[in-house]
Length: 154
Ligand code: HEC
Image (cartoon, rainbow, N blue to C red; front, side, top):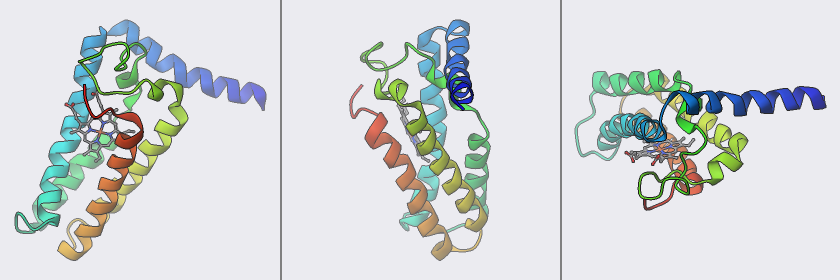
């Protein structure tokens, strides 16, 4: 049991270390922010529909959801290479150092996000009344991770 746990932890921590050696920290931060910017872009389109700022469009909603689903298949380990927190690179990133102290918790937040994207994708084409709560739930998973692991300022 103990051996298994150690192996699991080692794997989780080795992956980012490999990524750190491969890419300069500035590039890791740029990629990380790019990844989340893409999430933000898709989410903005969905939120605008959910809030009634733009008319509901089933095809557009499905396209946003499909793009988000692609993003959930991307393994984010390399985006969290050690040495790329706000403490390491003040002014460049809002990623709080707590991330690196609590990978399992970050992983849980990521899992909730992926699950919510799956639910959203299954109803995105079913009308505004179906879309709205799914967008709300997904937005809650974004916020939950930001509250704990993203600083308000760079
Ligand atoms: C597992 C944690 C986590 C989840 C889930 C998450 N984010 Fe983030 N997000 C972060 C962190 C950490 C940053 C800060 C990245 C940095 O500054 O290096 C961030 C940054 C951002 C940014 C700013 C990017 C930039 O250029 O500074 C946007 C936009 C964003 N997230 C949108 C979203 C949306 C939309 C969702 C949900 C659909 C989401 N995030 C889900 C952790 C998360």
